[in-house]
Length: 107
Image (cartoon, rainbow, N blue to C red):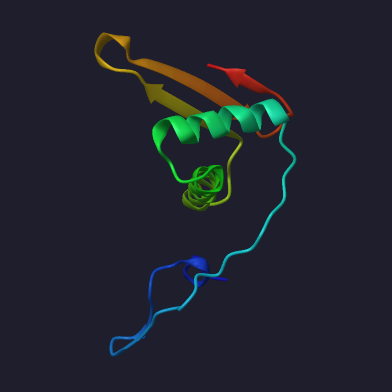
């Protein structure tokens, strides 16, 4: 199955026929998250003016799927890099998730 089936971009069948889906194909997933983590995400979204935690988490899932796709489904770990601050106060936090274990480590 082609990744373009799930894409929001138009699908070209021939040079003269382009199909534009009216509604992107999306499915609902359910995850359990620690209540304290939800509070952190909610505080982050409201402080930074983002629309919702769902939008932020959706973008993270989309980035995760794209990384897996580009790595040809051969991924052993994921590194999240958070950068923020201003000027000399800019800080970077690295988190590595080993997909072969249940632990995450700070790099």
